Image 1: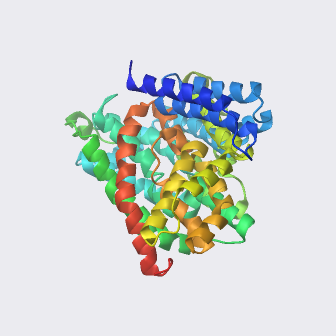
Image 2: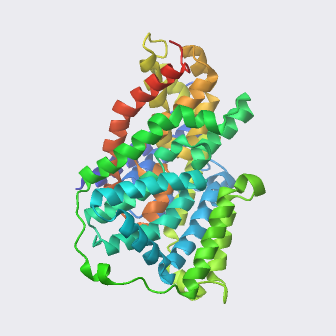
Image 3: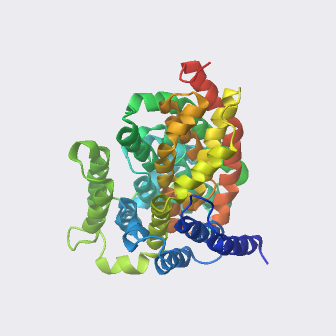
Length: 460
């Protein structure tokens, strides 16, 4: 039996045991039932022993039939903007592929970065970071760039299942996630934390303060270390393609021009969402609709359904819904309180305190996923501040370092979207994510602590 199957069976058995365990004193029975279902679900999501959409349906079914939460909570993922942003982005991606615009942009990227495999990976990571300053939606960045990067992989001779193709895909998925955590509006957890900090504690984070605190370590380490990690773990080289080099650029087609104009408008609306107030999700969905409209669109509506895979949409809705169920049933806060009681927050070493809080956030996000983790950490920030003697603002900001230690793709919607669009096996994600998270724990976390001490943000 494969290791992934063994892990899935172990998670299933653990989930059944937890489900039927009597709750501890002061804990509601629904918390244990939720914990059992979530344990089973995480095992299925993390191992992908069955298709993700089927795991998602199992989660929905168990939550509803066993009444751990009302249907509007269980299916809350379908109300999430992330689902509709991905749907619109998938349609845009089909348009980019069918119109030929993806191949054209890929040709430009090849001329700029295509001299070596490492250079093209590093250039892709850099491009994703630059886009994070312009586009507030990580899922949007992924859905726009993956069709282009897949076309680039074809031009560079990276065939299906090759290391080079996997490396470029991961450069997009991880590149749009890790370093952009240091840019306030660039990722969903950033925005959730910012909103909750103000709503619950009356604390406002400015764009500049967030950047100064996080970018010199989280941003730059991700920018430098991620390409190196991809190059080492997914070694490959660019094939000689003299046939492509000899071909002059083809004239722009009318559909390419229309789609480029639509993308410029879409990017403009994404970048200015604070001015007009329209969610990036509805901008994405609207752009996808325009792509498929007769006459003004770039592809016949009949081409969409055969190419559109709704399985990942169901999976993403379940991931978001699981975070909501964990929060609404009290599982997240009970788990947080249990973990707080088990860690030493009174140690003399400030680095040990910092690492303990990061570790707490890391354990919680395995259950809540990244979008749901800030809600739990913000709710328990007061006792953490009291135990450590640190400011409430410092406690809230510390959880950002935990987000960069993500180890499974189901934890982050941008990585779910990356897998949805490319079909890259989960084993390829984990091959990069676990070593990179270990590197972050050993290197980035201590650097972040000492950077904050240098700034005077933490007590001496």
